[in-house]
Image 1 (cartoon, rainbow, N blue to C red):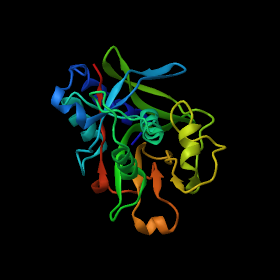
Image 2 (cartoon, helix red, strand yellow; image 1 turned 45 degrees about the horizontal axis):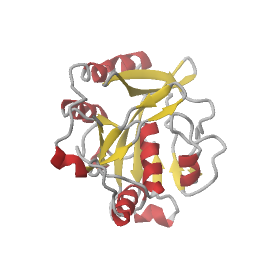
Image 3 (tube, rainbow, N blue to C red; image 1 turned 45 degrees about the vertical axis):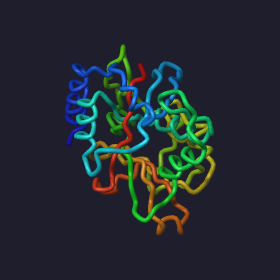
Image 4 (cartoon, rainbow, N blue to C red; image 1 turned 135 degrees about the vertical axis):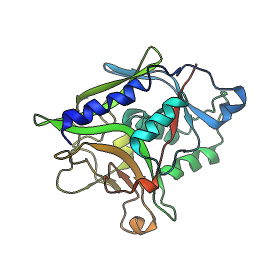
Length: 246
């Protein structure tokens, strides 16, 4: 599929947000089902305070359909920057429920482990990033907030981003989280570690970003988290919804 045709198709995702009220508050009895991620500023990119669901949903659903289902629910898919900030938050030991009470350490650790530690079966989470290439430029497309609604943005990948072209790279989790680019990706000089990093090849059709936790077989090979692996089945995928904090 040509890049231009694919990016035009992504307009459907933007259109689906134009009539969705993202600023409707959560019911008070739902606040403990979410944690708070405070808004942040990275150069020209920023996002407001958001809630992030404790539980994933929309299992075995395609990337595009997941977007549309979330928008109908007044929610959204986390982009790579927000997802990295979520992992940093869970590593920080200072996590709060949507009602402002502190999340117990054992629950915080369980949330983190659910993302980064292998279990019996592999599982993955969609991240709101589409990789493409045009005129030899590496591009990413994602959504950002503008006055409490989501708009689509396409921009060049940060030139300091690690691009694993021929084979996956093994990177250090904490170095990636603490020293990522403003877009949330590991830098080219990231420390070697145990996280499998796949920068999607965009010579053909554009690729969607996925965060994958591999099963115990991969753990024995010291790859316990994979970023952007395009070969993982949709049947393993779900999403961790975000909700605007109002």
